[in-house]
Length: 162
Ligand SMILES: Cc1cc2nc3c(=O)[nH]c(=O)nc-3n(C[C@H](O)[C@H](O)[C@H](O)COP(=O)(O)O)c2cc1C
Ligand SMILES: Nc1ncnc2c1ncn2[C@@H]1O[C@H](COP(=O)(O)OP(=O)(O)OP(=O)(O)O)[C@@H](O)[C@H]1O
Image (cartoon, rainbow, N blue to C red; front, top):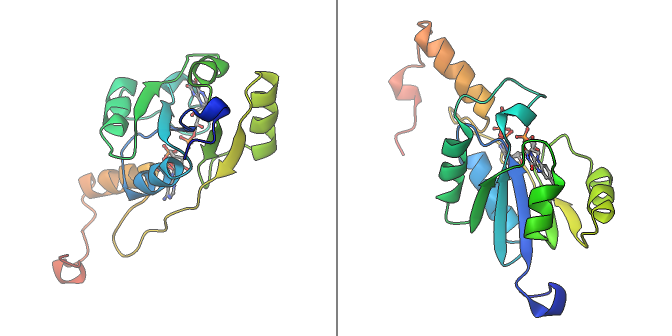
């Protein structure tokens, strides 16, 4: 798919905190990768994550884990204060927002236009967990805390062994 300018590979941007990787992240990044030829992921710096508790893991570790995923071509830590910096460097053709991200598509489209970036904005679907699975970094943290406080785990028989 090379519908970028002058036939170059179509560049897609995905972004997020990616604190404790889980299948929901993989679902999002695979959906973003399907929107073009090259998937560039911007990993949020902790200083910019003000809408929820600080990530547990350092940014470099979160970036490296994302970079290891097959769907991801490039992963970088975002700019500490100016979101236009990585966007101008990547010059994306598509920005894919996550299913629950607090960014408004029109707001992001307006920012991209103001930055002189010709780019469409899409939103990925969510991956709902089943059974004991967790598809939220915060939920994973909460379960760890509960288990460490001695909360008993469901009987082993209740857990599927697949
Ligand atoms: C187009 C775009 C560019 C962004 N660039 C940066 C950046 O350069 N640095 C940064 O720390 N966060 C950046 N972010 C914001 C983080 O990714 C943001 O904290 C993230 O959207 C939080 O989402 P989450 O709650 O799903 O992790 C950017 C977000 C968008 C939509
Ligand atoms: N279950 C999921 N299904 C699809 N996309 C998801 C899912 N969970 C997270 N994402 C997407 O992954 C990106 C990174 O999200 P983030 O790092 O906030 O993970 P999170 O698990 O939602 O964290 P938290 O639970 O702390 O909010 C975002 O675009 C988000 O929409």
